[in-house]
Length: 360
Image (cartoon, rainbow, N blue to C red; front, side, top):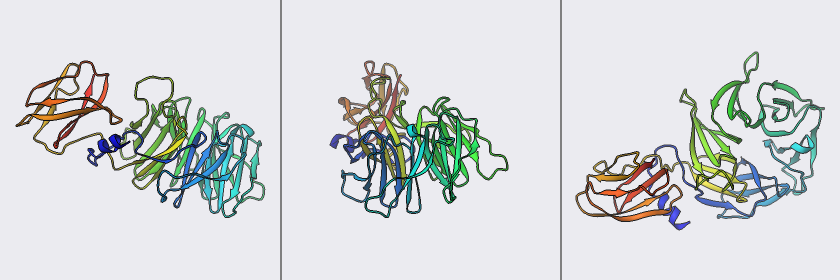
């Protein structure tokens, strides 16, 4: 961890790509799948732990999660409205809630069966609770203030909807089957799901902060973002847990994501923990001193540094902060990178620049 934090301090606060876990918020979490911030409390759905817990994000880290309610059968989705926390129990085809003002809340069933078919993620728009109704390829909503809440269809053309987030009047939904993000304008006369982004992978939770959409992509082992100001809506990787480019086994399994200012919280299902990352850190571009540069970039065989006036020490890091190579370098001298695996690397010149390069 010390090495990783040292590596992170090299980063200039510019753009979009993050390194692996910066701080452990809470460990020994039973398969965390969803996160929700409410004030200083970060609520956690523990699928394997069969409970909902919370941590105080202002506490000294790592901290121990406090159980809010236990003995739940496979909880997944979560949303908060006033003093009530709503959650989905997909395999019971049920939406339930608890009163957060109670010391020992008990489950209150809001809706069971009655159109629900593996309900996953949840979010609110006014008094309406929106539900990703997975098996029926649709998004439903229920008015939680109704005496007898009834599910009605919002849109029905999304294959295997999972992640769901409402930002203002816009509803974003992930299709884990099609690997796409869909958008619904909730103010439209006729509600239609339009394709918003492609290649979004297996997105299991969506969050929005400012002009960016954040995606937790479980089987892809990544957390990605979409810049809402970019008309191409390109999905860009921020955080990758796949350090060996292997498809199995999963190395982190980021299942949930929540943004709070400059902090990004990630639910790591495989690792059984919640981690925190600074959204101001970037390893997308490094330029402390424009007098030095690296070339060719990308490279297959060797790289050289231009602009050095003396012999300098260097380290080459991978994207999780491990030192891969070290040595001394002079101006325009070659560094052999032939044996490096394809990917992104960072060359740090002692007391000088950190330069990003790609090994093809």
